[in-house]
Structure formats: C-alpha cells, structure tokens
Image (cartoon, rainbow, N blue to C red):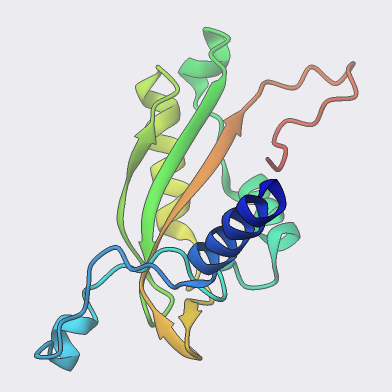
Length: 154
C-alpha cells in the first residue's frame, strides 16, 4: 500500500514537471502576432548573455560606474533588474524588481542593462520565444584590502 502511494506521488511529480507551462494559454484562434506577445515560463532553453555568464559579469564590471554620491555615503546593496528578452534578443520592459534602497544605485543598474547587447533568446520547441528575466546586480564598495571582489556573480 505504502509503495503504491509512493509510486503515484512520484508519477504525478514527473508528469507535472514534464509539462510545459505558459504564462498565458494560447487559444486555437490565436494569431501569429498575438502569440509573439506571450511570455513563456518555464522554457526548454533559457535566455542568455552572448558569451555566457562570464561575459555578462565582465560586461557589468566594465560598464558599471559606481555613483559618486553612493561612494561618498558608503551606499551598497543589490538591485534586482527585471526585463523581457524578446524573440530577437533585445531587452524590453526594463524595470526594478527589487530596489537597493538607494535610487542612484537603482538608476545605474537600469542604465547598464540598457547598454547590454542583444541576448540569445529562450527557446521552446526549437523556436525563439519571449521570456521574463530577473538579474541581481550587487553594488559593493571595494577597499582593496579584502579578498572580496566589487561585483560578484550570484
């Protein structure tokens, strides 16, 4: 009896995980243009920065300009930027998902994301699709004495 219940639970879990889930259902009368506005989650292949995570971190290190006011006031924190990766790889709907508590850090995070090149889009059934992406950007002041790096990948 216990073994049968365990099998049913495992079967249901595998069945649920293997089913593609869309943020919005596509109806049979959905046109191609309407389908392009759907944001899918989860996906078969996640969107990614060209060159991978190392290239993304390098881009952030080279392009973030720590705001002078934040340096003077010793402001640090993590900003979560949320955006949509479109089917052509462009980034749209860029906004703050979670603020650092300091508007100058939030503004800098948005500025640097807007500078990013086109990403490799997510895929579902071997077709490029739109997806929402959340990216944390840590702002850490580096004193040169510790082993910590000013920006680290999460």
